Image 1 (tube, rainbow, N blue to C red):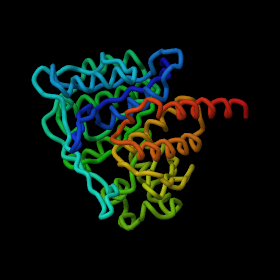
Image 2: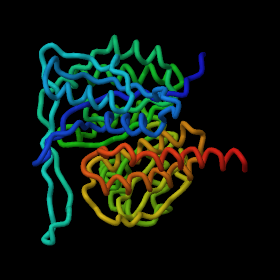
Image 3: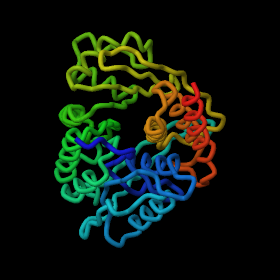
Length: 338
């Protein structure tokens, strides 16, 4: 079997996030793809080994916004399908603020139907076959519709056959936060990334009677027995747990704690939109550069925290990415020398 390439293929929603003062391109797979494009960019001007499979509307303003963002980050458009009937997806972002005016979270209203509900399997599978990536990234939201759901399941199954590492960012949202969809997705994953709330749901849905009271924000070692059972049930190789201000933890297939880190102080919190996507992007970028998992997680934690100081899921100034590209390169040189 041909070995996977040094590339990442991502499938799912590319959409427009509607904030109260502006509209910007978003969607978890698109956010991860754009960060990867910036972090893995060839300093000589070549494009990053990143392919996004999605679907946008024909000739609408949302689609134009997404195409412009693809171009900004040096990402190819050939695997982004054009839907002649359905419009580019959009999400209304509602922000909450504390009494002192500081950000206190956000919620999403994800409108339906959208073009990304109709990702066609045949061209998506052709893109996967052509690229044969090292990592295949997917989530649950784009599986809400029958067409895209079937396409993503087919892609994940073929990625298994190609020897890709299948990275599932569970990313549960209203309408897709069901045990049935979670189970179908977990069965197609090698690496799983969840936040503390999502892990609590997984324990309730699939765990033993004593697992539900476990606190994902507590001592990570206490989670190991329950995680071992969960990971064995679904054949998972790695589980990455993000814990907000409590930091992160990573576990092996037997539930053993591989690495953990504390949360980082954020000098000026603007919003947390896309923070989880930023974590995934840097983790994958660092792994693509050949770094050890603990170092990759530490960089992912820092990158996600830095993004919380920016408006929306992607910084407007490309200068934001430069120190992170340099840090990736420096880490590569350090590990090569040791």
